[in-house]
Length: 331
Image (cartoon, rainbow, N blue to C red; front, side, top):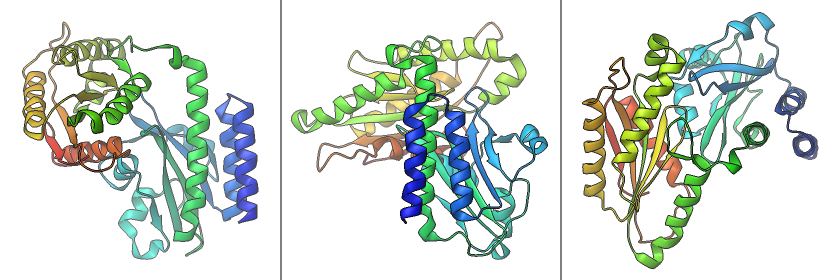
């Protein structure tokens, strides 16, 4: 335990001293390999522009493999990890062949763990660790590994804040909606008002169903114009008491104030139909959206996991097929 804490302390010290997250990740991977006797350790990130996965930093993987590695986000085990944050553990790969094949990077393994890297409920990627030995990675290792994954997320987030100076920006200029940090402030304020006003509100998370296809067909420039027009459409459906922000590259998050469950569902359906019936840009691009929805009720204690709940709802909507709304009544 002391060894693990010392390693975490070393990584944290470096993370506070530099804005270059690559240095932090390199040190972090070295520490994880030494502690857990890994065959492979990799920090796998989501490319926000393409929504593909790429290997950012690793041990035990060839440069050639890293260069060609490019996997889509999916609704399988890795997709569920990225959306829900539930760790994946394979203590003995011999009995879990299908799952092991999905998780495998360059080399087969006997045991493996994958842990989400996220900050402010935004998923950045995951930490992959595997071993040639069965039972080398066990349930009791997950808290320590998750601490390293969280440290990686903090280092990446700190670097991005520094590079993009997002703390000084309120509006996302590509979509015209609020940046997520400002939206999160609005959401936290709404939660604090709930007990005083006794008014429910709804949170919606929207994802463009065919965004990667749009990028591949029309290119990033026109895809950017598409996002701007979609953002304008979403903004046009809001009341002055509502708020909307950019959550991911093609994901929007909405706060629908003073709203009951049925009203929120009707709004989500109207917005879904409006997007489906619209054409965007000069190329008349058509698309649909998947929507996760949760209603925050004034009864009971405030639930700070509301964003996680609506992420899980969106995952269920995507798993059910395109152009769907999935709802959790209580946030």
